[in-house]
Image (cartoon, rainbow, N blue to C red; front, side, top):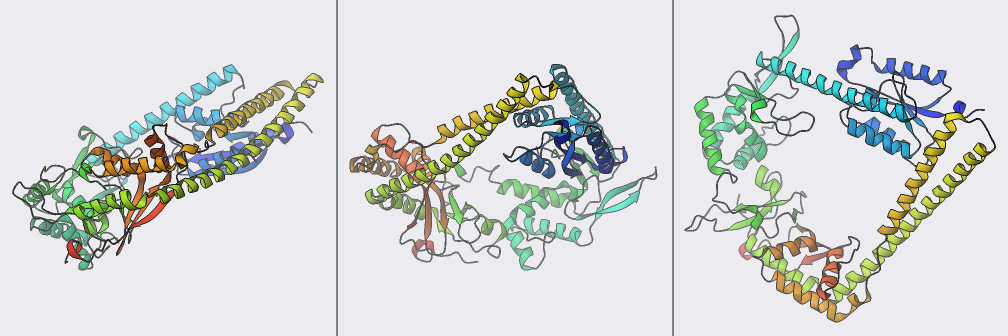
Length: 550
């Protein structure tokens, strides 16, 4: 039996909704690919069917499943067959990157309607096809966006999710086409006015969310929170100006205001009420108001997590201010509790001037004792030993794969020397096998570099550990400096605040690296073992940490 008779391939078909009427349906693609395979004695071992997905990027479930299978060590497939190169990818850079990676594993991409030779001329033509596919995609995108802009200008709605307060109504255009437009929603429209009146009346966004949640009123099946309230407050659709095109639908990047398209919709509130809300919003917005300190001054910012809901913490002020207008008291509190109220999460509120020194003192005096530092070093040694064992297993697998490739290359070379008429196919397979062997060699070299170096013996000396502790204590003793914040972020992975205690998860790798720095040596590359400990004696219900009243 010849090699061609046993060649294994997979079929990949893709369609977007608009293309189903243009002779590119999934069934039509599969029929063409099956006929192509039968004519060339190819065996289709799998079919990957992508429904309603764009090829301008690689965020396609079936595509990724196919790539993962083709790049696996157990793969025996030699080609992907598509009806047209545009089915595979409509982005030149991504197409070339994926095809290059597949070639390393002996896999080609074949197009039924665009056959090319496997040589320099074929590569040139393949590149031309890729450019045409990308150009066609961009032309289609520009035409679609122009049509959508015109649709908006005529008063119709393009999206699937209407702004809060509106519903989508099916209508017939003068040309007889089915269109959609925004109309006030019987349930949501009155709520928009209520949100604005509560906000202008003095309630903050979180207080508005709490009021609505306590009344049993939901935001489209979800609880209200601060961001949803502000989303309603900011949306000009409430005063009859719906703005389309703020965000790129594919990249999610914000577009310039010049690209926005505005259309008239029924107003839900008076313009005066909307402007009053915007004035309140500007006054309260921490981004636009310089009355609140910058979040960058938070010593523990980004490290704190709520032990109840897992959300991060943010700064919350008491509302009272000193003579110069700065908040008298600042608290760390759960972000969920701050934005959606205590009904969503009770959280654990604690004063910043209490928690900051408590964590610093614990790190400097209790966490990194001589005994703990030596235990960290032992843990790191154990972790590195496990890592070396895992890398050794990987290397054994790669060496076995290299040996198998060497044997296959040797068989092809013997066949050539024996004078067998293998034509172009033999040269292709031999080149693919050699590229695969080079890739294995690169992986072996990378695995050798990834193996952690053993810890230097001097790190176990008590004087080195003690020098590290003194340096740490001196640095953390001055929390106003940026160096203290930098040390915290290097040493601490996260701090979980629960009912009665604070759990600190440290980074053993960073601690070992800082021990090496304390001796004046280079940074030591280690694993990311975590150290878990508690801030002892912190009590959230006593003294200055009394829970706030609702």
